[in-house]
Image 1 (tube, rainbow, N blue to C red):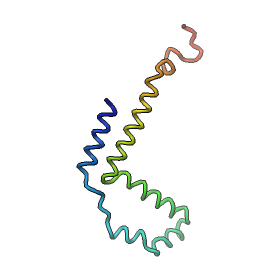
Image 2: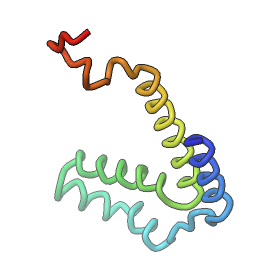
Image 3: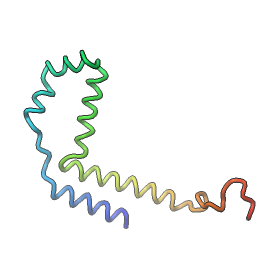
Image 4: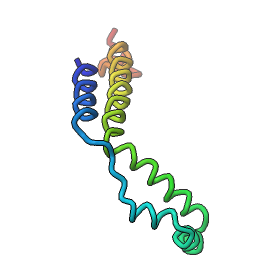
Amino acid sequence: MLLAIGLGAALVIYLTIPEDVVDPVVEGIRSSKKYMREMRVIGGSATLMLSDFAHWFAGFWRGRALGSTVAVLTVVATLIFRFVAARPDIYAPDRAPGNKSS
């Protein structure tokens, strides 16, 4: 049920949200040599790499990529839920270590 709802929501998101529109002004500034140099001067190469990583990661939460992200997160959450639900005796409160009631 969890998988069906999550994948259904991902499909609705993917089909209804238009493709991510990139602003050419912002992309032009981000790819300019002056911007790159100023980023390196202000924060070093690590800042430039972290900025690129943040831009890449933010792409997962916009446009049609959001539908794919929701689908992957749904599958991961379902697998974790099934893993925990398949072993109820491990997580039961009356089976705590040191409890000798059995």
